[in-house]
Length: 176
Image (cartoon, rainbow, N blue to C red; front, side):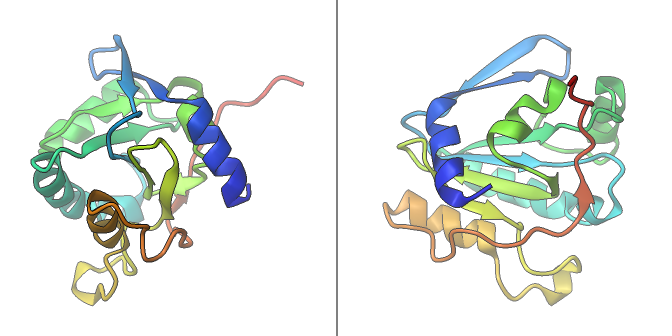
């Protein structure tokens, strides 16, 4: 999907429909606030190498008014498994289920870990990798941090799109 199509998709979905860890519906308004949607997995080894970075980003940017949503869209990872993983790794945030990969489809998320940052206008400001290295000691570019700093300051992200690396999101089969 091309970036203009992503921009249109985000504008058409000012509310992200998810399920809270307790299974209840949870909807998140994106208009008027900076929102970072992280697509994560319980079983992706690459994604799990990011668990500490996810927690650090959450602590830093949630305190600055950014809405950070951590989303599991994988059909092969039930809600109980997601909740147990979040507890086991001591995430300071809830991980929401994206039943039917609806949010993943709207934001064109294909893999985990992947982040989509929406500006206050609801438009995609950045889409891609959290940073440039699976090994935290080798990171030289902090794409998510750079994009959030720019968007919070009212500027365009220095890089609007990067290739993410990780595990494919397992979606439900679509009926034909």
